[in-house]
Length: 251
Ligand code: BGN
Picture (cartoon, rainbow, N blue to C red):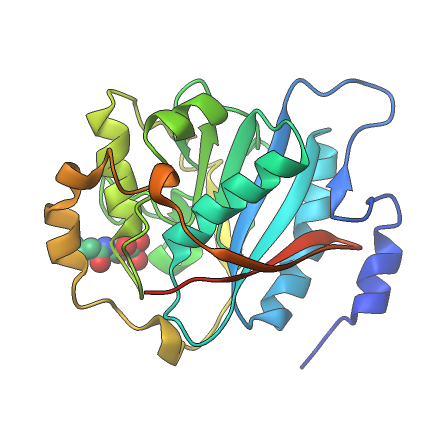
C-alpha cells in the first residue's frame, strides 16, 4: 500500500525550498542544522520520513536542510561512510553548526525532542518502539545522533571501514569517549521513536568482521574517518524536499 504520492507530499510542503531547506520567517534560528540520512532503495520509507520530519522540524522553528546520501550499487551498504559523506557535502552547501545523523526509518514521536546542537554529543533515539522503548545497552549510539560541528571534527567522524550491518555506531561511541566527550540523552519519555517496518535487505547483512573492527578501532581513530574519506560524487540534485547526493564508494 502506498498511501501518499510525491505530488501530494510536495504540495503539503510548499514552504520548503529546493534542496529540502527551511527556516523560520519571523525569527533568526540559533542553529543551522543539517539532517544527514544514509539511504538506498527505500522510497516508501523516504516518503513517510519526509512527510513527518518537515512538519516536526518546522514546529521547532529550526533553520535546517535535509540531505539524503544515496549509495550506488553494488557495494555493501556503509552507513557510517554515508554519514561522513553527508557531513562533507552539507558543509559545502551551507555553514551548519550542528549535524544530526539520522536513519530513514525512525520517526521522532515527541515534540520536546529538540533537534538542536547539543553541548555534548547526544544519542537521540534512546527509546525505540522496536526495543519496547527501552535502551538495549548503555553505549548504544545507533539510529539518530547529534553532534556539534567541532565535536564531529574532533573525533574524525565515523570510521569508513564498516561495510554491512552493525558495529559502526559502537565505534562512534568509542571515539566519543576516547576524546573525553560525554554521551547525553533526553529522558526516555522524550527520546521516543517509531521504527518503520521493513524486511532485512540482502545488501545490508550483518558484517562478520564487525567485532574485529570494533575491538581494533582505537588504533585507527586518527587515520580512519573524515580525514581519509574517499568517494565519488555521481550527482547532487536539489529536489523539492531534500538534497539528493548520489555517491559511489568502493570496499
Ligand atoms: C548491536 C550492534 C549495533 C546496533 C545495535 C542495535 C554490533 C557490534 C558487535 C559487538 N553492534 O549489536 O551496531 O546498533 O546492536 O541494533 O553488532
